[in-house]
Image 1 (spheres, rainbow, N blue to C red):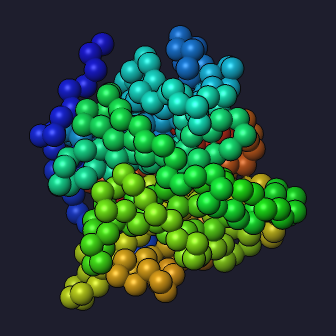
Image 2: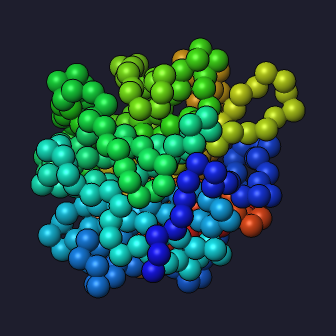
Length: 341
């Protein structure tokens, strides 16, 4: 098998892409009957235990997935798979991002989210480096999906603390824990790039180059409904809406959430939903959000897995007339759900 040839001239995005014009996208997504689409392959040590939580991007008429892989020794890395139909993948037999730095040793590299800088044509991946004790938000860049340049965690450990909620509802202060960065690939009107990141709530960060980031301590938003009363995490990069109103700069963010247990949602349940963001007025928080999840754990491998009752997304693409939403199932396997554009 040959590694896919990807370079600065490789086209990205579906050739017939149609930007969404209303919020939300869908919102009714249908699970693929052949789920899971990716499961651990025992031939490859780095992914023989679990596969889940994949970033997605369309390149040269194919969907590429950067997925979270886990070995039996619980080492985390990021693998690569690609396909021409959205469902049936070929995979590279080695991880493309794996622990090499001190802040990754003892745990690994997980939960990638990918964008492409339209100017430099570089791929920018935010991912979580985990050393077995602390999760740190990091950035890697490259041109070809194979040769990565890693950068240290976006801030020092002593520059951040937050109040977190455990699965039973207890709260505690956690120091230095940063993860889950979803990047706006377009510059803001102030000239900066922005990223929404966080787990207990959503924070903002700014950058001049998509590599080096400054965080804001102001909370952008937190969970609002009972199915997100424990935490919320951003999913893939926000998707720009084409509106007929001049001057409107709206984006749709797919995001994940978890509950301590409320209403019909059992303790620890992870769901997926959407919110609407005014990129020009980030200080005001989200414009709107769906008041129900678009995906909740239903199938057996979503309800029972390495972690029970989990659906979790980091990748959505438009491809061949559909939206493909890729999501982890029970932190163990990878599934997809689709809706027409």
